Amino acid sequence: MKPFQTGLFLVLLTASAPAFANTTVNVKLWDKEGAVNADAKMGMGMPANMSMATMRIKLDQTVVPAGKVTFEVQNSSKDAVHEMIVVPVTDVKKATLPYVPNENRVNEDAAGHLGEVSELDPGKTGSLTLDLKPGNYAVFCNIPGHFMNGMWATILVK
Image 1 (cartoon, helix red, strand yellow):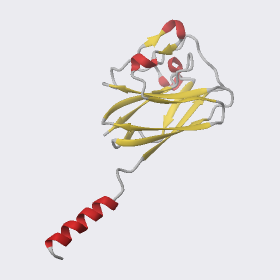
Image 2: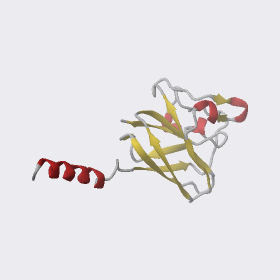
Image 3: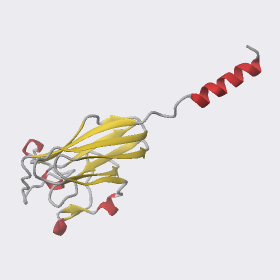
């Protein structure tokens, strides 16, 4: 190939190559029969025995590449409505989210709300696609009482 043809070939090859692939994270929202412990203190950054949590968010991946990330969310509860919200966090080990005790929920705006899969009825699914930059993120359910019952997880975007 001549230099011009080689350059044109590379340009065409680059133009036809797909942009960064979309990463899918499967998210399961679960609880022990919808039971909420009003005195639970299992929020992010709190010392707690998470094996005692009555509610959880399970991610099938906790480290993903930067770029488009799709969260495929399933509410596996038989009784309770759940949701999933994504916020950035700086230091996972020390991170706490701005909790509003009299509302039993996180202040989403103060936490830096990036997007959510709104209230899902039991057995329902939803999805959310975000363009995430490298860093740490928290995903949590913000139905009153659920966050403090252990319904949160973290994900690292590299």
